[in-house]
Length: 326
Image (cartoon, rainbow, N blue to C red; front, side):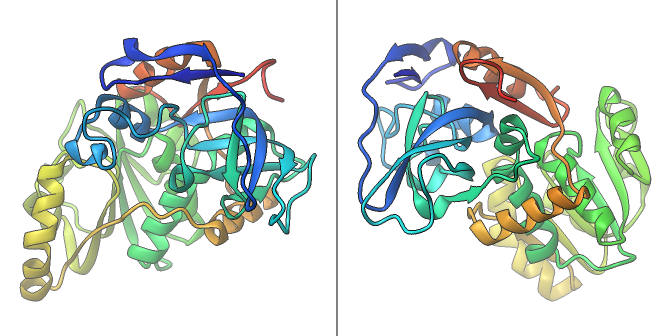
């Protein structure tokens, strides 16, 4: 089978399209013929081995030779211990916790990572869902405990997580302010944003508006900036950002919580099949839809990762295999 492989840390030039053996399933695994896989910021981090924590399990060279976590495809074969899936089932899932390997024609996946794909959902739409949509849901509902009528700020609203978060926040009856670049504001308004802020033209920190909940996909301000934007009893949730901000939240967050009654939280990525299925139900109902900016063939994974890393993607970037996934 064809797969996009890397055996050392570096930029996208270390990626090589190779012929490799089709993996062999274990008892609790299924073999999935991949039809589409989405690109995530984790791919960029793992490719470079930066930040250094991404090298856990692979200090000098990558532990997993094939990247790609969010897959959609069709079950080809099942292990002896598989109980709920059959050959021919169309599935999707976040496989980051069971070995990665999505940038390939076939991948072995633990049964518990996969959900059945709704018939009305394309493979590309399915690949766009697992990680970004679950992060948005967990950030707003689990960590943020979003409530009807709250004011919500989404920093980095025009990307994969942000576009899902906007839709979920509006479903909860929130008043949503979205921060992103000029090119993405029209899309965000169309999707229902109540207010938009162009970070290239104005600094949302300087506007002096207070929020009940901040969902941060970028992490480009200090903890002091963010806590200054929160109302009393408000919550800040970091989904993406640098190690410097993570350190601030870990060490200063509890102090701010005690002294100012403001919650400073970090969302640790935890794939969750139950949350995934909740979001699939919302898709079937027509209330949450993935936004897909561009799609690339497997041979152009490097181009796709570079495009995502530039920060210009509106929604998700997806890889399709063989014929363009329908």
